[in-house]
Image (cartoon, rainbow over all chains, first blue to last red; front, side, top):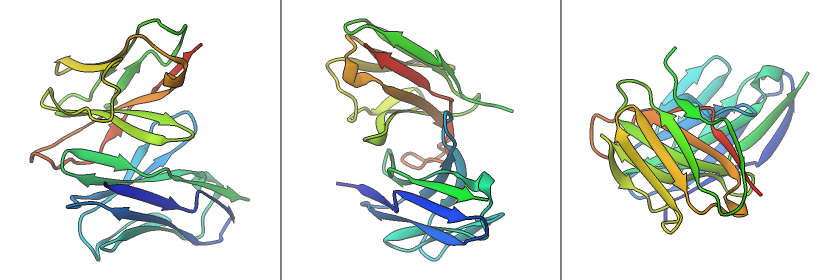
Length: 108
Length: 117
């Protein structure tokens, strides 16, 4: 069965303290890996799509990378406004399955 | 900005009652996903439509849940009868799919917070 596992469940950082979030997956025929950000009381908001191993995408302080078994979301010099839950989702045939998320808190 | 619209935003009902949640996808999108989110289970896929045709509803309890797309501007999720364990946030998301089985990024609505007493 297809599985998506995110770690850690929660991460607390000081402002400016860089770190990485992990998304590991077992999917038959990966057709895309997506990263979303979710703020409390809102729906997830799209960040990145990665399609093949070795691919990287960047947006402001965030960089997403993909290997054949996992994806990382690197956060460089985070700010308090980066606090949110970060979700990854894998796409197989007719399926878009989400991980449980990493709840990131960035303290000033 | 185009957005996915979900109604109602909040719903409190008693066990055994019928609940209907509605979703208006973004104009021009041809895929609609329904998800349920709880603290314990995270985002669970309930149903998936492409060009209004149901392609996957394996995550949905068949005896009480039903999902339909009567037209391209409306998707509905019904629970009958509702139970306390159905309490969760239900999200609708829409997107584009130009190739069967391949979806572009999803746009999510704000969700329906359902409480079944």
